Image (tube, rainbow, N blue to C red):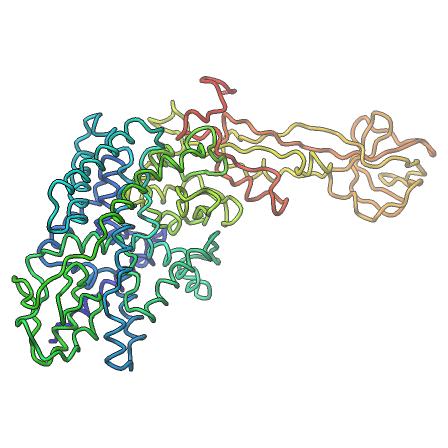
Length: 636
C-alpha cells in the first residue's frame, strides 16, 4: 500500500474519531451519548495545551500528560501529529488539495515555496509561552518544582529558536538580559498573574470550539439528535469567521494555518527539526523535476535544502518522486538541511510581549476592583485568577451543558476572557439546573474542577458549607411587573428551585381604578357606573372591589357590572356608594443567604429583553471577596 494512502487513512480515521467525540459529548446513556467516551483525548494529546497549562498553573491536570508522549514521539519521528493525527490539519490538508487540483506544476511549486511570513507562528508560540510564564519567576521563588520544569522548557525553546550557529558572547548576553528582565518583571511588576491565552489559536481547542459551537448546532438543527431544540451561542459569528477563514485561506496557500499561524506546529517543528527519523534526499543532486516541491504540504522544500521544522510528514515527496530520490530514514538529507528562518528579535519580542500581556491587561482591574459582575462562571469554577491559568477555551463545557446556558464570552469581557465559559441566563432553555454537574466532569484542564452533586447542593458532608453559589439574583424594581406596573406576577418565585425558596413575596394592595359608584345588586352580581369597563379585564382573580375597608374578589366583569366572590366582612354597598378597584400584588424579594445564582428566575421572567430579575456574580462561592453577607448572616 502506498505511504500516502496510509497517511490519508490515518487522517480520515482520526478526523472521524474527533467528530464522533464531539457528537457523543451529550448528556445521556445511549451509545452516541456521554457514557465513558474519552471526549477530551485530542485536547489532552495537544502538547502546547499541556505545556502552557503547566507553566501557567504550576501543575498539570492528569489527562494532559498525553502531550508528553506526543513530544517524545516528535523527537523520534518528526511532526507526525500534524500530518497524521491532527483533525484540524486533516481539514486544512483536504481544502488545500481541492485548491491545488488541476493547477499547473509551476504554479503549485510557487504556492508551496517557503515564505518569510512562516515566522509568524514562532512569534505566536513565543507570545503564548510568555503569557503562560508571566509570573513564573515568582513561582520559582516559592519553590514550585513543576514551575521550575516548565521554566526549563521555555528557556530551552528560547535557546533553540533564537540560536543561529555562531553566538558567542553577544548571544549569551542577549539571553542573560532577557532572563534578568523576565525575573525582575515577574517579581516586581504589578502582575495579574499568568494567563492561558494559547487556546485562542491552539489548533485543537480552536477546532473543538468551532465544531461544538458552530458546526454541530448547524448540523443538528434539522435532525434534533443531540438536542431537543435548536442551540444558540452568543458570538458564534466570530468563532465561525475565524474557523472558515482559516479553511478558505488554504485555497491560496495549502495548509495556510499550519504554515503561518499554528503555534503547536511551531513547537513541534522546533522539537522535530533534529528528529531521529526524517524525510530527506538520498542523493545530493537529482533531475530537478520539482514534483516533490509541487506536492509538499508544509513548504519544506524537499527539492533543495530541506526545512525539517516545516515538514509535516505528508509523504507526498516520497510517493511522487519518479527517481525515488526521497526517503524517510535516520540520516540527514543529502541535499542539505536548513534551520528555521527565524528572526531572533521577533521571537524575543513575542516572548517579551507575552510576558507583559497579563500585567498590562490586568491594569483594567479585572481581578480586582474592576471585576465584571456579569462574568458568572459554571459551578465548580476556580477563582478567576486560577481559572484564567487553566481554561483552554475549547467549548467542551458549553457543548455538554444540557440547557445551553453556558455561553462563550465575547470581546466585552476582554482578551483574557474571550471564548471562556460564562452563564448567559436568557439564551438557553433554562438556567443552571441544580442537579446537573456535567460541565465539571468534562473540563479537560480542571478550570472547572470535578464536583459531586452533594457538594453542589450542599448536602451530606457539605451541609455545613452550604450549596455552591454562582452569584445572586437582584430585582430591578423599575422593570418588575408588580413593582413598576402594578401587574400581578410571581413567576420568579414560582420557578425558584431552592428549598426553602430564595425568592419570597410580601403582600401589597394598590388602587388601580377609582371613580366607580355602586348600583343595584342581585346575588353575587353588582351593577357599577361612573366608568365603562373592558369586559373580563378584571377577571384574573387578583383584582378586588373595595367599598371602604371591605373587599370582594372580582370573578368576572362586564362593561357595567361585576360578579363578586365576597369575603366574610363584605356587605353589599348601597346604591350610589363610592367604589374602587384594588389589585392584590405579591411583590418579590431575594434572600441572598439562600440564592444560589442558578438563573432560572431570570430565564423565566416574562419581561422580555432585559429581565426584571437578573443574576450577578456577587456572592459567588468561588470568590470570597465578593460575598454580600457577613459570616453567619441570614435567616439560616
